[in-house]
Structures are given as C-alpha cells and as structure tokens.
Length: 635
Image 1 (cartoon, rainbow, N blue to C red):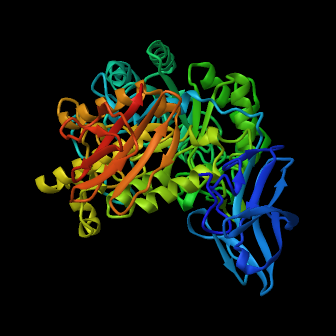
Image 2 (cartoon, rainbow, N blue to C red):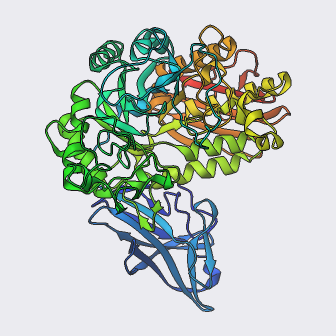
Image 3 (tube, rainbow, N blue to C red):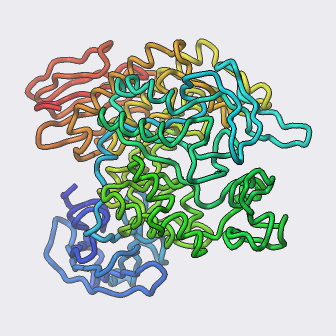
C-alpha cells in the first residue's frame, strides 16, 4: 500500500512508514504523517520509546502538499534490537492532539494518549532456518499414531505398571480413579517403528517435518511429565529406533523435531523420584540429592512449586547452574545429544514459563551443534509483545525463538468459519505480519488442531449446547450425519487457508482422516487406519501436493484483497505467479471480480468460473467453497 491514506497515519502504508513492519537494528525507518491542511498544523512530532523507557521526541519537517493534506516526515534509526512504541502529537490552531493507533493500523486523533503503534526491532545478523516454514509438518502424538506390535509391559529402571488397550479403537480412559485422580497411564502402544512403517504415508502427504510430542520415558501416556530426558520411553522403542527413524526420514527429505519439556519434570522421574522407582537419589528423597537444587521446595519434601499446582509436575529452577549444564551447556547436554542423534530441532513446551536467558542459551547450544537447528516456542498469543507473569518476553530480537505455534491463525480461522467476518480474519493476520520479523512470519507453525485442543472437525460441527455436555457424553460423541457433512465442508475451507498462508501448514495426526473428538483425552484417540474418511484424505493429499510444488505458496508475498462478511480474498505473489485464494464460508453464492487476464488452475474441480475478458476475471464462488486460482505464470 503506497497511496496517501485517508487518515493522518497508517502504520501499514509505505507512504507513512517505510519499510513495512519489523526492521533490523540499524535500519533507518522513514515516518510520514498527513494532517489535513484545514487543521492549520503548526508542528508534528514523532515520539518513540523503547519498551519500559521514556518517550523521545523527533521533530517532523514539512515535505509538501498531497491533495488536501500536508506531509510531515522524519527518520528514526534504532541502534539495537528491542520492542519500541511510537505515536505522534500535532499542534494546531485549535490546540495539541495525540495521533494514536486505531483499528487496522489506522490512526485516531485524541485529546489524551491512547494505544501506541508497535515497532519490532531485531538483530539482522541472526537467521532463522527457512527449511521449516517452506515445508509441511505432521504432528504425531506418539502413543496413538501407529504400533508395530501389541503392547507389553516394558521392563527396566523407573518403568511404572501401565494399563494397555488391546483394541486400538478403544476410548481413552477419562474417569478418575478411586482417589479422584485421572492418572493418564493407559496406553495404546504406538511405537517409533510404527512411525517408520508409515513413512510412505507421510511422504504421500509431502511431509517435510515430523513433529513429535514427547518421546522420553515418563509415567503418563502424554509424556509431558518427563521421567528420563536421556532415554526413549521403552514402550516407544529405543535410541537405535530413533536414529533409524531419523535416517530413513532424511532419505525422504523429512526432518524430525522433538518436544522439550524443560519447565518441569515428572514427580515419578529420575530427578524427583517421588515414588522411588528409579535407582537414583531424587530430590524428593534427600536434600543431598544432586537434583535437589533443581526444584523450588517451600517445605521439603512435599511442599514445592509445580506447574499450575499439579503435584505430578514439579517445577524446576531453570537458572540453576547444574540444571543448565544438564539440559543445555554440557557437551552431551540433552539439547545437543538428541540433535546429534538425528533430531533437527526442538519445540519448547510452555515457552512463556521459561526465562528469556534460558531460551537464548538453549538456542545458542542448539545452533552450535547444528547451525540450522530449529527452536519453536509454544506461545498462544502475539509473541512479539507477550507479557507473561508481569514480564515482557523477548522472543524475536535475535537468538531466541525461530518460530512459534500460530494459535492466532487457528483462532482466526475457526472464528471466521464460525460466523466471524473476513475483515476480522484479515486484521488478525495483518497484525501478526506487521509485528513479527519476516523470517519468523514465514516460519510459523500454522496449526488448526493440536493435542491441547478439541479436534477441528468437532469444533466446526458441534452446537453451542453440545460444549456443555457432561464428560461421559463427550467421551463417545459423534456428529450427526447432517452436522458432519457441514463440518467436513468447513474443515476443507480451514485447510485451504492453513495451506495457503505463509508458514508451515501443520497437520495434527488424523485431522486429514476425519478424526473427531472433544478436548483431552478425546482428541488423542488412535489413528483410524483402514477407516479413514477417504474423501477428506484425498482432499488433503491434493492440497499437500499443491503447497509442496508451489514456490509462490511457500515463499511468495501475502496481500489481502477487499473482503467482506463471509467472503475472504487474498493473494500470494512471486516473480513467477500470482495465486488468488477465495474462501466463501457463507450459505449463499458470492460473486467477485479479479483484475487478472489469465486463470488456468483451480483447486476445487467441482466448481466452474467464467472465462476471462479484457476487464479481468468474473468468478462465482459457491456456498461453503474455497477456490485457489492461478492467475498467469507458473506455481
């Protein structure tokens, strides 16, 4: 956007701020404001403050007349990375006013200081590994994806008795035991060798990254209560199986990233050893334990800090020197060891609860082991300005996170398909695009479902009242035929958006097969091998091929076109092609016009559109349908 705006300032308009969005330190940023001449402007001042600091004024000089507006400009050059805020003051014949941030990056004139504009400044010398964002990711919950044999009770140090499901199609245990606890110790027996046996399947989806939820030994089936960071859970396999998986995946052009849970360990672990199953002397057993300093005991041994008050997840002191050495700094640290064994990166669980310094040191150690190692953070909001526990987080200044889970995209997709407006969707994505460094925006983990959320098909199909169902009713809930068909149409729309936005489209195992389920544990059933929704799987495969083969979708620029209500329009452009995406989530046909002279491809072959003419392309988009149009050139 380069034309002079119809407001005093627009943060996304290159006539007002150049360059767009986040900038590297040392980059001169030109700010221009356009007050109306009728205001009798005397002075315009840009005020810039580093987060937590004092605002510094920059006098803006008059640079001419643009229609009914004057142009005032100045240059600000940030000399170091950080989060900056800015606004303007304007002195007129009627007195001073504040020019602050309104909706959509547009300015508002107020008598008092309101919301400020954001400027993210990062270290331009730091490079995030681009391989992740350019490829498709498949998220595997290890116990539930595939098993190569019937599960048996494993042997060895620290292994707790487990409950096994012989029937892969069972409902996971969700009822509390006689003590009122939900133990999460029922297992279906998914294995690493089972994943190896399904590499052909993943290849058919053009997967480039396999993201595993935790694979290390633990008491629970979700394994977020780590028992031993240096050992694959014996039910999953062993270290040799992991190495074989990484090698065979690499031969197919796939990488593996692991889930690192470093804010807490398990109560039943080598380090805390609350149940005495390990041969080690744990912190719960003795103050002389080598791990005692890892934990925050208020009253040893039974009063200690734990994640969200859950006693089975005792929190660690991440800055404890021994803990830092073990996880990060040692030559054979947890981070470096598993990268050396074949992993290509880490996803950091609850990144908001890890100190900035811990994340920086972890990233540095990973890059030392593998220069292109990836570090992804679990952050549910806009990570560029996130405040956690009253502290502003520093994720994107350079050397912290390479990517985050794109929950804002997920929320915006589901809100739009649930009746929200296309304008709101576009605004959510434009905020992220403006606030994130470009390399991060194109490296995001673009999710629609995860192990922490209800299945996308269920979210898109259930009524408001069904969310209130008791747990017993939710356990085996299935959508009615009518609701299922509606949800399937919406999921296809969700997938089109997910696969055509910058970043890595990330499939939560089984979404492509039509799996249903409310929240944990009903979103973690076994993959339905042999009972997949074949039409849905066929659609996903086609979408995966399109995304994998299109350089424009992998790397191209993003621009939202004029959208309204239930009709979302945006385009991806490159030097070779222009791809236009039209998503009609309404129940009525929508007609639109594109300023294109050629259109040769369309993803949904059930629908038709009119031929081009000298004025462009006239398109009719049927209800609940998405079209992907290639307008000239190649993909």
